[in-house]
Picture (cartoon, rainbow, N blue to C red):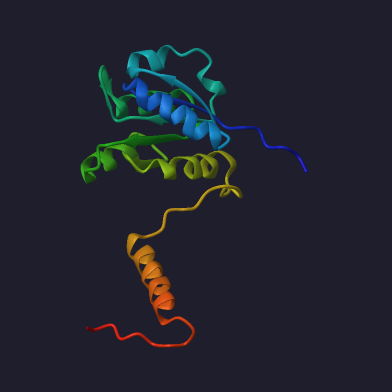
Length: 162
């Protein structure tokens, strides 16, 4: 069996703490991260073609992430771009996809980033360490079923009303 190359992403974010957190989080998931601050610095990063994916914030101190996305897609059409941002309106999402993004993830749901990176870079879901996002209602239903099973014990029923 051939070992897979670790994906290497460029993360463009203004907040240094977010960059450090993402480097650690994704590093433990098997993804190498290079961080840069702002649109202009991202455009100056040498050898951008060596990245497997670009992860961008939408609001940057020196420009709009959508503009950066368009520039990166023009120069590197085969490298996917993913937005990871706190901007969650339908208009902003639509603009992200119009500018060429393959995915649009909303902060603070960082558990979605690694599976998205692996899916876009390798073409398949990761086979280790990730639990895919579950619909909140489905998760609540599962917890309720578990709770009811615990309360029933060994076949005894528990009335659900007082």
